[in-house]
Image (cartoon, rainbow over all chains, first blue to last red; front, side):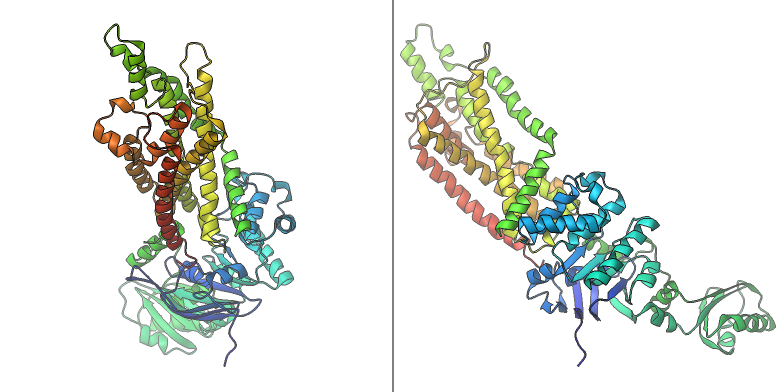
Length: 340
Length: 283
């Protein structure tokens, strides 16, 4: 029997209002000390999954176990053992950074003297010493994120959930945030579960990645494993519009793993792009079809995403389906503390 | 539980202290009522009696009209204490809704802090303001009696320690009662518009069916009867009876306090059930 992870999800399902299925049977295990990335477009079910794992939302079906505690059986125990960094800033704007930390510590039943000690330590760790006694409303975006992280760590959790933690930060802020996470992992052995919209972050920071789309996990593995599954390079051939279908011809060329036709373009997965391109151009020309453009790409997580979901990774707020919008609406209501 | 309650209550008081504008505006409303409304409406029903009416009859009319208070202003000032004890709690639930909108409530809900601490901290801070405001009104109304050109509150009974305690308990209970109601609305609902609509549905009928501001003698009989069960009237009765004497009241202050406590016990129990459900650990 396989050993259960620090975070164990087993057939998790969440249905809102009995009709909108936001998460549809998600299963995975996160290993101790791992940074586990959870990727997906808006409305894919990322935040709903985090909410279930962090004992804020009851699963409709399935089981979630965090550090050995079933979230449905002992949600308060789970909350004591985990830290959660939300998408939005949740620090109290009218309090100072230090006050926010001390209040958060009190919410975990930490005695006042110990709360002050931990607050001081986290203020130093997050390099907020100069701003510790300033109201949070005067903080920059990066400082707020660091404070959020400090608040999430005040009770010394071993598991940290980060829900789109770098959303809205500039590249410098993102890099800074991740350097803190890496440092914490190295020093404290934290297990980190992170949802992110930024594929580059997932690529470089996560040990393993799960891709979720329409409530289902479509792929899991390290970034390299996922890229390897694509089977080599991706070549896009653009042909003259209205030309005959060359799918069969291209599929028959040496080294080709698969071909997808999109309008007058062909997305070809092949073992190596460089020798394939002249062969493909020659074959197309012989078939009387002009090639108007060629691109060769080493696989990135964008391609991985395209491969497993059948579409480009959507930008924030773009290309939402009716179901996506319904799920997002539920999320907004949930964020408002809502229950209907 | 106590540490969580203490931490969250500290947060509430810190937030109040960081908003001096809100403190100032909360003082402005009772100040204007005491300075303008009370002075302007300070009618004397004895003036409408025929000339030559004996002084004893005049006093008896005033006594009956204002339930023992020596003037409308004195009657009204005690009513204002009940009035501000309600109006000062109106925003307590709105603050919860705004904390939900800004994500702050989500952070608290993400911790293992018990729902009793979440609710209790806001109730403590939200009730402390109206209690302080109520005593500000009392003090100001008494002070006005010593300002030339202004009418003020004239305490005609001997209050004593027990009387002072009864007033304190009445103010505490009425503040806690309405803070509980409005805080529960704030926890149950998500939109400020819904919240304020509901607050008006409760606030206006309660205040307008009480005898807090109306001269008792001018109220129709049916309204007098209805107001006897109104929690604001119950609290105000305790104040008026203690400050102006018991002769115009059928029951001693303790009975009114008991009635007020019954309101608090019933609505508080309903609130606890609703809030516990809304704030259960796993939604």
